Structure formats: C-alpha cells, structure tokens
Picture (cartoon, rainbow, N blue to C red):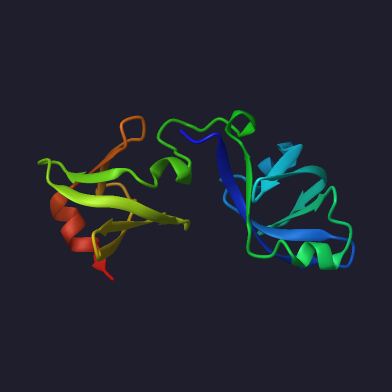
Length: 167
C-alpha cells in the first residue's frame, strides 16, 4: 500500500493572504482539521489553519504567503501520510487502494482493472481493459466484494452488464 493518500484537490486561492480552497475527498469534512502537515507534489507544508463549510475546506499553509503563491498550487492534489489519516469503518476504502485492483465477475471472468474512481454519493468506478473503458457505480448489488489486500474486486456479472456504461 502507498505511504501517502490523497485527501483533496486544490481548487483555487481564497482571498489575498495565501489561503487555498480545496475539494476534500474525505467522508467527513471536519477531518481536515486533524492534519498538521500535508504534501503537494512531494513538498511538505505545515497546516497553519483549517476551516470548512458545507462543500469545501480552506487551508493556510506555511510558505504560501499570498494569492500568487496559492495560485501556483491550483489543480494539484493534497496528500497526507497514511499513518496520520483517519481510520476507516469496515467496508470503506481509500481511493488510492482501489485504483489498480483487478475486477472479476463472481464466476472468475476478468473484466479489467480500476483506472480511476470518481467520488460521488455513490462512487463511480472507471474500469479499463486495454483500449476499452467502462464506468459503473460502486453500489450494493453491483459490487459483491472488495479485497484491497489482494487487489481484487468482485462484481455481480448480470448486474454489472445492466449498469456499466462503455465510454
């Protein structure tokens, strides 16, 4: 498993004093306050302040003193050390752990591997097999089992055929 996990994406500068607005990829936005340091493209930043509202989080990072410095971070991912990330409930997984997992039907037919996860109320998995690509919801009834330790996701073949959309 990877040492760092992505917790959000920097959307834009917020104000003129270097604060950044991020789209968090956490179940609870309030968890953003638990992090004392974050990483952007490998560079470590100390979190000086954190706040959140209904849809976004706002961070002030050491070394990001003004709007111009914050603008340079636009569109980049924010990571934290896995050891500092909140523990997950049973049946929950970090996106970074799902990407790359092989997808199989309950009969053992290999469909491809997860290339991306689009966070939503019900996450949407992007499945790739060579040049072909499908999207399907990671919903109960479609996904039968997730085994990130062994890199394997099992889907109900019939249900998958009903809901998967080829790109």
